[in-house]
Length: 333
Image (cartoon, rainbow, N blue to C red):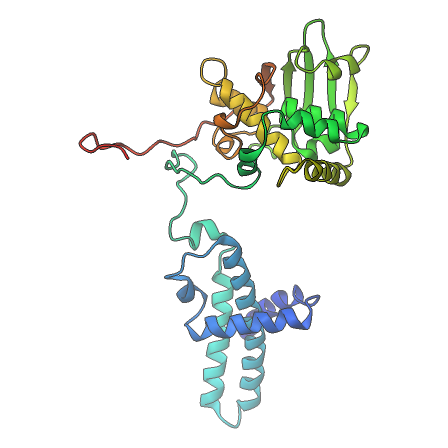
């Protein structure tokens, strides 16, 4: 690496910190000094299995501090070139070493810096029992008829949207785009355009959920004469759900709680009626693995999902993983 290349890398990195306030930059310098004293970024992370967010925070701090140091070392090397060539050489070599380190840093945390990297995409991922957290955990303390109570408590302009969420498990972002209801003779077809869709990477582009009209007569009547578009202003809907939940004494309820409840109701019916692939399509996933983070069959409430059929635009990849082999010589815990 040449001096000009090292300077270019430093300039490029510092350009992205120009809008930082002084407090942020001072904090980043403190982190850099601690990491630099330990031998550099890779050495610092060698025996530390940090969270991804912590890794990127420390990496940014190190890049910022190293860029400032590169500029300072090269400036000092140029100043000492005639007075002390030996010291100038040391400064220059350290600046170029830092430049090489910054150049080699991979932006991909998963591949290079995790102590336990994930399995390749073409292999089944190891079985892992995750703790229930977030909105899924919040369903535990809710009464059997909490959805009906919540919808009754909502302002009338938000009730249909909440019904659509519990009936289809759609995301708030998808409701904000608009969801179409179409009444047939003996069914209600709901068309959802995926908010997380990326071609061949994630999410379903379009999915259709066919409902039993008897479960949701209000929605069926709304679309009886002609197809109708249901949509929300996302932030207003979120606040309305939160306020209604607080009035009823429901802790941690949000629009995503309805999605988790939908998943729990559908999982209760799985097995003979629904496959993991059906569940993935209904939730708008492109793999059958993500559904493990939504709802639990034991959290099911009411008389079922009311779903007759599910269809999606993309095939579902099967990578739920394989459970650990059990040792038959010992009793399971």
